[in-house]
Length: 69
Image 1 (cartoon, rainbow, N blue to C red):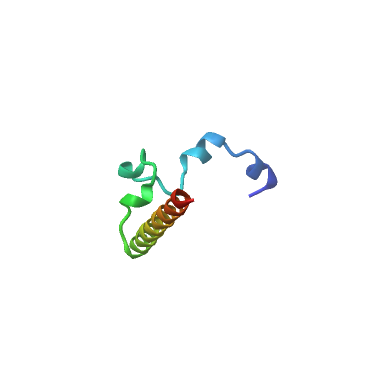
Image 2: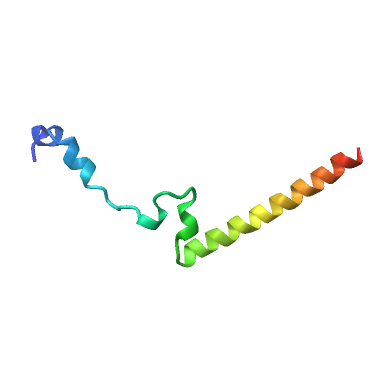
């Protein structure tokens, strides 16, 4: 392949050659990872839920402290 071949690539062809197409069920969602399955996705989702619960608990504690003041 020469330098001329490399620089004359057709952008339309390059755009059509996506490596991985998204799954239709995850296309129009705010968090596509919610619909993914597998061991790693399960770990990520459980960690996410734990962090959200802890964050909610911290906000409640903060609100209680502010109300006492």
